[in-house]
Length: 74
Image 1 (cartoon, one colour):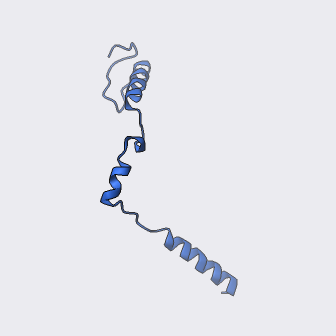
Image 2 (cartoon, rainbow, N blue to C red):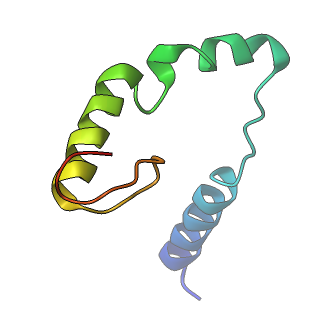
């Protein structure tokens, strides 16, 4: 193995090893991550309305517990 390929192999190995770290959330950091802004959907009231309209138009049920058909009368 030539010298440049050894250096390249070592650099790749170091990069791969350094990417395998486990990030642990400390108890005092959980309050920051649990804020409503950090949620996937910050405005749950608007999301509920959008889900209702979508499922009423589609005539299908999704993850929300809305039943019904395409008429919009759930």
